[in-house]
Structure formats: structure tokens, C-alpha cells
Length: 397
Image 1 (cartoon, rainbow, N blue to C red):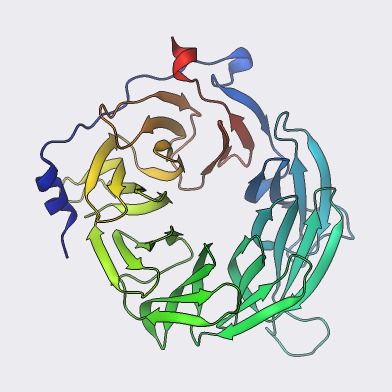
Image 2 (image 1 turned 135 degrees about the vertical axis):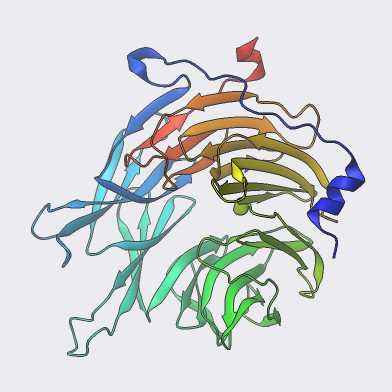
């Protein structure tokens, strides 16, 4: 297989751009472009976006005695207005949420219990999947065997991993199918009627399986697709032709119909932190943090790559590691470990900074960014959720 270095050699010199300036502070000291910032709890565990709202699972020390868990914390699911950040409703949860999936006007929350209070057996954990509608009302609740994140869904239902099995439920809570993969899955992606599961198989790392999302039938499975083990942080995306999986600095592309490797590459010391895909383009964000190790340095990189053959079309260098990124087509918004949000467009020279918003926090890996329409939503290490509307080219003129 060709390496990334060979791709670069074939393209010749590529432009690389570092930070070119930062937007100033707006009213009240908030960064320019910030629409609102809220702290719905001492700890924001996850958040999910829908056109009608922003959902977040939160926790805090103490709270109402009826909702405090064994760990002394209270947990809740909250819904925020996407335009104002106002809290629309708050629903108490009995325990910590292991996963959150938002689909349409419904939020699905995976609740993990370490011990079943109905038995005397230690560590006999189980899971409940809770479905809540846009008004905060429970639609249904289902008990599952010990289940692990993630949680994904499509137009036909929602999918969870339970004791090596994949369980598919309808949006009304009934079981559609269960398939035993004999492997602990750690990441999933669903696209175009196929469900892809990354994990281990028989103690072998780098296993991948494709299932028919309608029936649960296994279409194919592969072992050792990558040398590095898949983890819950593995980036996994798919389009109509291929499935793309990144483990540490490795990236493998498999034919979605057969599971055969189409192309693969390695990003050296860089760790892949986000992937985005269209029918023709693959966008990749990496973080390199080798300060003091053979002069490797600390920086981040965004790549625009041909989804068909892995040829690199663009490279955009940042002077800080990128911990997450939101991709919309070829537009990219990178989040660095000090809270800089940097926007660019991949694929078409010149590769330049379109905007930069400085959220100014201490170095951390705890931060996430997502996009909905023209807006960006960020979870900060200060346990806040904020909305940014970056300037457009018209605004800048």
C-alpha cells in the first residue's frame, strides 16, 4: 500500500498555513461570534445536536436526595434552546449516562448500572436505554444486558452493543434483531443500510464487521485491519463506497461491499482525532504532541484526501494539536487544545485561515466541537456549552 509520504511526493509542494490572527473580544469580554454560553451542570458529559435543540447529559455533586446516585452525584438530561441557550427542560437520571444519541425530536440515553439491586450478586451490571421526546417526556425504557457505548441510529431505529452482540431497536422501543458477533465492539457507524462495527475478535485487535441494518445479517468480517487496537475514541465513518477507520495514527479504507482494503496510510506521530466524509472527499484532523522527543514538536494538521484512492489534495498546518474538528463538506472548523477554533476550506488552494476564535483555556484534551447549519457548538473544559457563529466572507468584507 502507498504511504502518505508517497501521496505527497506525487502532488509536489503543498501550501501550509499557520495562524494568521484572532478575532477580538465582543461585548462583556466574550469572543467575537459567540452567541451564548451556558453551564447546565458541574460536569457536561456529552452533548448532541438537533435542529430543534441542544441536548446534554450533566452531573453535579449532591442535589435532590431522590436523584443522588451511589457516588454522591446527581445526573440529568437537559435540553437547551439552540438560538438562546435557554434551558427548556431538565430530566433527572438515576445514574450516569454512558452514551447519548439525538435523532429527530428524540434523545436516547444509555444508563449503566454497576450492580443490580434486585439480586445479591456483585458486579452483575445491566443497562437501560431511555427514549425521551422533545418535550422531555419518556417515550419508552428498555433493559439490556451490560452494554457499552457507543449508541448510533438511523431512520429505522437505534443500535447498541451488548455483551458482544449488536442489538437493533425500533424508534418505538421494540427489538428488530440481535446479532452475536463474538467480539467486544467499541465503535459503530451506520450509513446507507449498513452498520459497521469496529472492535476485537477472538482476542485479535483491529477487527471490523459489516451488518445489514435491516436484518442484522453479517455481510462480512475482517480481522487485523489495522495494527493498533480500536478504542472508543476510534474515528469511524462511511460513504456509499467505503468505510474509513482510524486507530491512533493509522487510517484504513475498506470496500463497504466486500471488506477488502482499498487503501491505507499512516500519519507518522500524528494521532487522528476526527474524520469527515462526503462521496468524494475525506477530511482528517490529527494531533502531534512530541515535545522533547527527538524534536517532533507539537502541532495539528487538517488533511483533505480523495476518498477514492487516498491521494492527498490539501494540508493545513496549525501550531497546536487539534483535539476535535467539525467538517461540513470541505469546510473545516478545528478545535485546539488551548481552545482556538480555526476555520478553513480544504481541497482548493490557497489553504488559508478563514477565521479564528480564541476561547482561551488551559491545555487539555477535554473539549468537543460540532456543527449544525452555519453554527458551531463547543463543550469546554470549564463544563460549559457555547454557540459560535463564525464570520462569513461577506461579514469580513
